[in-house]
Image (cartoon, rainbow, N blue to C red; front, side, top):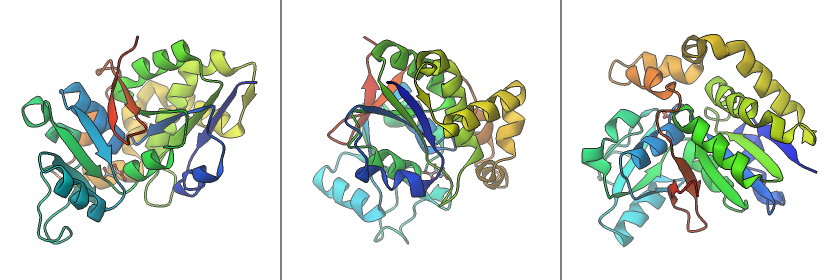
Length: 254
Ligand code: MLT
């Protein structure tokens, strides 16, 4: 029996280690902005992204591999030396910073408030994909081709709350794979995300702009353009997969 379910909050994804995910494909959304940023980085030629939870984990990873770039945010802004034992991070979490010139061929160690935490909680899953509106179609196509029995769409949220933009991303993916899961168990959470997306789909930029995260970004002149960047659909035809080694890499469509 197939199943389709959406998790809305960090409280739900933090319990994933207690679930049997051996037959599950997790798809993680952090539309504003961690998974959008990862997809952009891979699209611009980054080798891999290592998502980690804590700033100290990122610093340890760089000690081991001095060639990596350090990226991430706290309160939406790039992690500064005050938070990182005097070390300035190379990048924040704005996808517009992750240009080909900066990231091509590089491995990026990234820590963000929610997105990197959500991804790591899915490590026990059979497969985990990092999704955004930028690579929505390619992600749905990969799911159509591989046909996982259980699809679990994980919204990263904002701090400990649900995030509207992630639910819209989850709903957009549900819309694309609905027919594949219709004969099985569709959780109410998937119906909710799907229906919210259908209500908003004719004007996604306005819907997204109402979210708490978007309002926070729009209030900062240097980050405001991230919101329209992150709502672009299908501009990165790539699938981003989290490997058992903890690295997010571009996956061939095969
Ligand atoms: C997160 O991981 O919580 C977000 O991506 C936050 C942000 O981009 O500001």
